[in-house]
Amino acid sequence: MKVYEIKDAYYRAGKEYGEIRKAVRAVIIDKEGNVLAEETKKPYVFMLPGGKLEDGESVSDCIIRECAEECGLVVEPKEELFAIKEYYKDKIFYSTYVKCAIKCECIKALTDNENKLGLNCVWRGLSEAEKTAVKLEKFYSSGSELEGMHRRERTALGAIKEIFKA
Image (tube, rainbow, N blue to C red; front, top):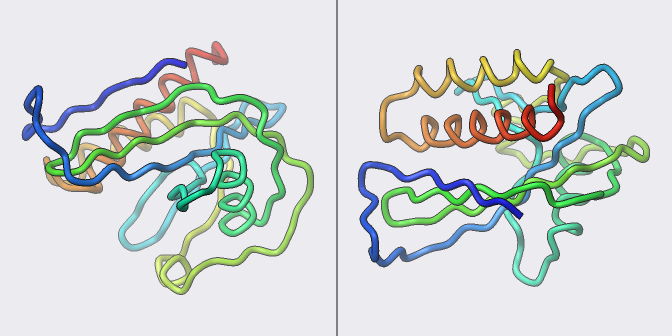
């Protein structure tokens, strides 16, 4: 599996990083070539569905749980496509991207914070999704966590376009 690396201005080879945060993101593409994404209102955030891998949780179990909670969808993980390893100040974020198929709908279980942010799932064309991530990466201040998150999503959407030749 290919691993893309994103290094911030603080990156130095051999540097000790205190925390490694593992996450999983769903790649769900419909028959028209649209990708399922999540967005929030304030701050405006655009990302693929997914979240933190809990202790002892498998990649498949995590993506099933996150898609049910955030999107109200029961998914079937099909294939781990790639990963992105982000070096951010004193942390490493390692996100695995998994191709998933929708099995059926279920009841969402958003957290209080996700409700407060106005988290919503939307379908976007891959090119449109990638352009949104690029705009947001440029909008947020350099070195901020939100800028880094949108750089990750831009990288992921570019990889997805390449994989699916969209």
